[in-house]
Length: 354
Image 1 (tube, rainbow, N blue to C red):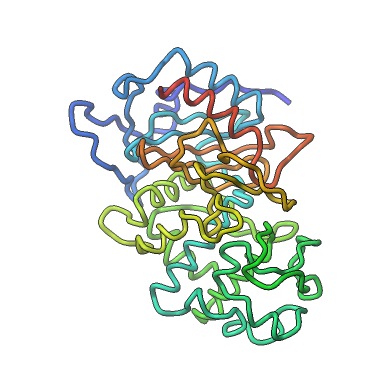
Image 2: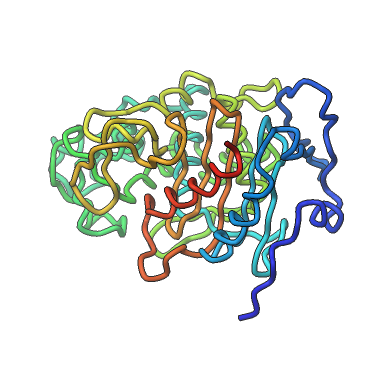
């Protein structure tokens, strides 16, 4: 396969005609791109005092690790926007499990509109018998347990069909990364009396100018969009649920989402991964690892993480959002979420931004 070199940012701006440079003498206020206009303000590395000489090693690493697109925003403005291997600003790509954060946010919107309460049992919305658990055990499971990966449902199979949803532990007593989270989509649909995607489009996607669509994957629905749409959602998360002056998701729910949600895996919120905690667990096991999730990344980072290294990193202390889309960095080990790729990538990013 022919590999194309990453295009410099200024050339990309010229080709796609969709960015404009901010006045670097102005105070760095938070910027939100228009929902309808294709322009997106940029800012230079030099104005931020970043290390230009470390940019090429970062690009080289991205190319070597099967990256298709990469963006850095600071205060909402594009500092880097790179595309590789024929990928462009308009190409759609799958979020994989990074899209779980879209489901969490949409669930929070439904709660703020009074359609549901995450502390209510799931069967209030889906009816009794949505699992194959004994009814007394099924009735322990709330939407919050689905948000926090603590439903206690057997995780032997990732395929979410009723026959696989058997009892393993009481809800709230065991953390296990599991695709049963997608039942939240059914909860939102039932509570709102419409299909999930229609509700998501009206309440989230269209509000912040995203493109994209939900597509049935092998084992659950997967969101696809272009890179800038992923960046828009990261910018919404950075601004605690506000887009310009409009509250899309209330700040209290967003803060809950990016805080430790249970006492089993402190590095997990409401389908968001959290850095800077004392220990963490990873998909596919019950081992508790000591230390932070991504040691090279800022401690205040929270992240949407999906298989094959789809990433949204949000760093409040630096008012920064970082996006990575592509194939698995290690094709022999295409992790579901957390991988060694994160730490290696942040080593390269740190060389640029520090």
